[in-house]
Image (tube, rainbow, N blue to C red):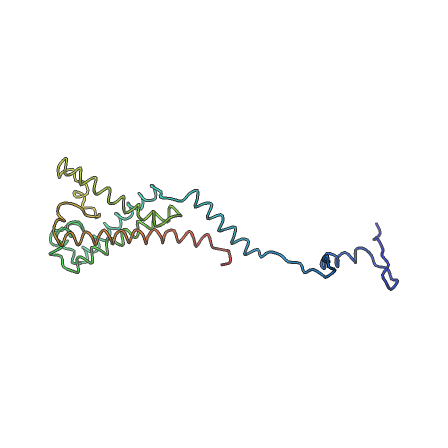
Length: 231
């Protein structure tokens, strides 16, 4: 099919195919001026969409996750066992070479351990709950601080329940004491000034470690969500 011809002002012919590009690239406004085509920034639109998606996912999947907190607590106990064994082998002043088998007994005998032993106990449990909070925050993806608190509360609840059962049924049913597992130590052996001070310090340090670990675990997912998008 032949192109439709138009007559220019100078009398020459112009086809519709030649005129079409000019009409597309320079549209006229109502006032007769030439409009400049504008387009939205793909990067800006993508960032907005990504943030909206994360907010929607948080609304559905946010909150405390019991499974993540439980496995975080298991990780905290496992790392505490390893660190206590390493410190004992290295001869750090935890009192382990003098018949103290775990960080729990170190707390009970805080007066004899000295500053070095107390700091070592704090470092062990801080790192243990830092790892536990990280595992929980990484598994849950959202609300890392809440996951860390949940890890800490599980550790506290387990100790209280087993200590109560041991007090009611007898010391032979105190499972954690028999296994010498490092934990947040709460029992009658802490009823001294040094023991109470050390216990409070341990509670604060383990809670802080769990909170920081949970936030670090969540931070990984926020980095993944931002990958490939402009700031």
